[in-house]
Image (cartoon, rainbow, N blue to C red):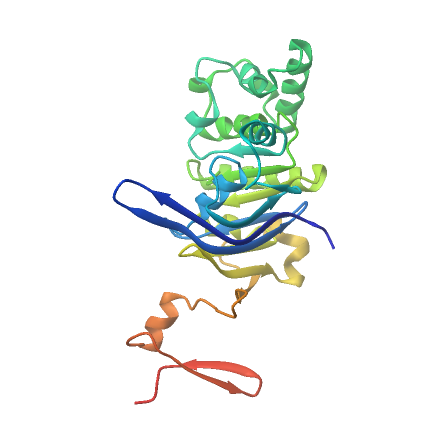
Length: 292
């Protein structure tokens, strides 16, 4: 069994302003194995992007435990954090303007994160990465000469420039069409398989999330459920269509034995108030509306 490269226990993030406190993460528990390709889904405001920013070293946790590649992110000083961001994680954003500098060509953009290497070494590595993402023919192109999908492929090359151990992708298919989105996912699968790269994708795209081994749903700042690929689908994730159910879904118990019940299920139950009836029937826990 693969060791966990990301260990997150009871993680809390509070954003404070002068008049307001916002609880973005409310005790999130989530472990991600080394070499895993997985997706995190959730509605806007659920906390999924906050989690990604924490792992990326872009934001500091408020409480709990967050260990990435053996490093306690609560204890890193500023210099150690800069080193961590350079060597451990690579980021791909939905907004391509955040990934690329518009007045530089593709080779120059990919070379930017490697500023401490020699010019020759930077160019060689940039050309190698362009080959990996299938963009060698666009090496001299600038941002306005590239389609959205081409920009995103260059962005992936930039994220790989310093050989990170973890690739973090925030809505990587959000600004491209379905065909390009599938191509990008295929690229992630190839990078994961051939380089052993750990890849964490935050997405609203249910079709994309169907084509990874594990999907974690976050609701209200906590892990709500996990979807694990069905064994008979494991070897053909590439060919599963968006209408085919590829995963078994499991509710997640936290360390206090609590479980979240999705809002749509509560609505179907016709629940009024905040009390439910619990019964153990033939080894199964049955949740029902209280008897009147």
